[in-house]
Length: 226
Image (cartoon, rainbow, N blue to C red; front, side, top):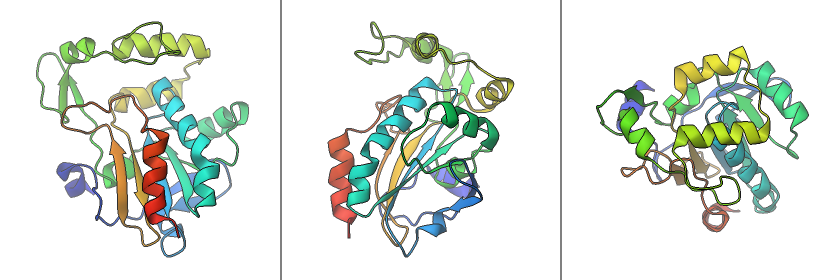
C-alpha cells in the first residue's frame, strides 16, 4: 500500500486493492472484494464528516445513486470518521439507501494512492507538501453556498456555521491527523479494475473541494454498465 501511495492515485486500467472496513449503514464489514465478480461500484473516498466540503460531495454521490443503480452499479462511500460517530451523524442526516463504511485510519485512501499532504510554512511540493501561504491564496467558489470566493479555511468555517455542525473530540482528532487528506472517486468495473476516476490529486490542484459533474459520472457509468 505504501508503494501505491508513493506512485499517486490509481488510474484507469489499475486493479483496485481489496480493503475491508466497518460498515456504517448496516452491521458487519464491507470489502471491495464484495463487489468483484458481481457488479461495478463507484467508490468515493472522503475526509471525515467534519469536512463540510466532503459532506456535500457525499450528498452529490447520493443523488446519483438511483441512476447508477439502474445501470447495475453500486456506490460505496468511505469516510475518515470512527464508525459510531458516523452512525450517529447519518442517523440525524440520513441519505436514502446510502452504503457507507468508516475508515478512520485512512487505509483505503492509502491503498488507492491518495496523498495526505503535509502543511508547511513556506515549502510547496504538491501533492506531498503545501504551504499555508498557498492554501490562503486558493479560492473556493460555491455559488449558492458561499457568499463569495473564499480561501479553504474561511470557506470551511462559513459552511460549518451555516450547517450548524458541532465538532466532537473525535472530529478534532481526525482533522488533526488528516486535515489535508486528498479525496477521490473511483469507478470500478465488475472485475474490480478502475475505469474512471476523479481525484483532488491533479497536478494543478484544480479539483480541490469539487465534485465531478453528474454528466461526467453518468457518462463513465454507461461505459461499464452491464
